[in-house]
Image 1 (cartoon, rainbow, N blue to C red):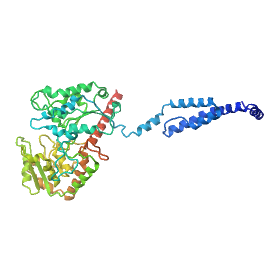
Image 2 (tube, rainbow, N blue to C red):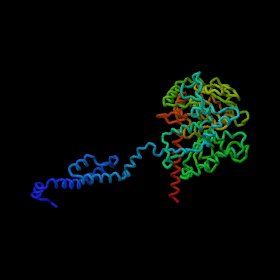
Image 3 (cartoon, rainbow, N blue to C red):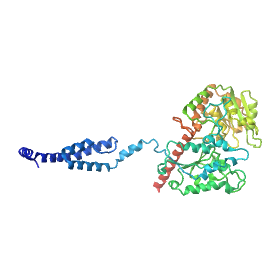
Length: 500
């Protein structure tokens, strides 16, 4: 209803104190919804949380319009608080999560699958107490650097089969852990499979060897995290080779257990320091070396030191022969190296003390351009990673010594960081290792050395008691690769479900 000017004047003259608050209240009542709409609109598009209107608005209306106006605005504020954030705002918040798509959930396994196994470390081998190698998060004791072969910090006498604890310790400080398995891109199973199998390798029957693996599978199958993808988003590690987990029969005399042959485990991603050639659910990760940097600078300083090394020897071989193995080429390598003035030979006979001292190898590797890496008891050798750590270009004689193994950590272009000489050519005696290596132009050899030195960060396991800032180590690369694999498996599962 429209008031005339005269009526307005009369009202003000006779009853202004009563009418004015009502007019202000009506004005506030009509304007408030529009103010709220504008405010809500701006809040959503600016990505700000939706909150109450500016407090001065409610205060001003209350002072001028009375308690009714204040009550009205407070009710509207309460309504706004109950409105959930828009989908766009939620998406924007998620987009700012650097861990989205990278979260890892770690199973809290019963202690019998890890900690209890470590308590038996004195009993694993008849001839050595392995407990000393479990100190410092699985790194072992600091090495003796009296002869200066190492840096003063970050070097430990690490057992080459000690990755179970090292990897688990590193996973505990992974930057994107979650307690909500539904958010996880992958699920880690901290079962010390390598340490479990080694304690039963000698003198145990088949059922004892397999007991922990079978118990683990039963435990996992009862968990809701397992049922989400049937275990295809799970990964587990053994610090030993896959051959230790590939027993084919139930004979007590056959080596190892049958962890890798269990159907449930075949759904998982399984990590070893050496995989089997014919399976596609297990993957190789680098052997642990003696170097476990706690800071990025420790890596950079070591790389720079290796770039400055004088490499006086063309090639070297460090290791023993295999007289009981007719397929071994090691005796050929010893013969060729011993006959060359350009080769440094470190021949290790059984029980020889010098071959148990890390600096014996590392000092020679640091002064050598090419390091011979034949097969040993299995296709791979920890020595290959020690050589790379020293900036020495590895020479392989079998594709399974590296090329078919460490695809997540070594370049596909094998010739950029290594030399390949076929075993058959060595056995036939038609190939001279010295002549083969001398034919490589010096500038090419220098470039290969630089490539090898650049690989060092990818192959080391950082000190699990600290955290690198900008460098990704072997664990970081492994987890990234596992997550990528799980993503592909998840797409395949969803694709198959949609097709059916």
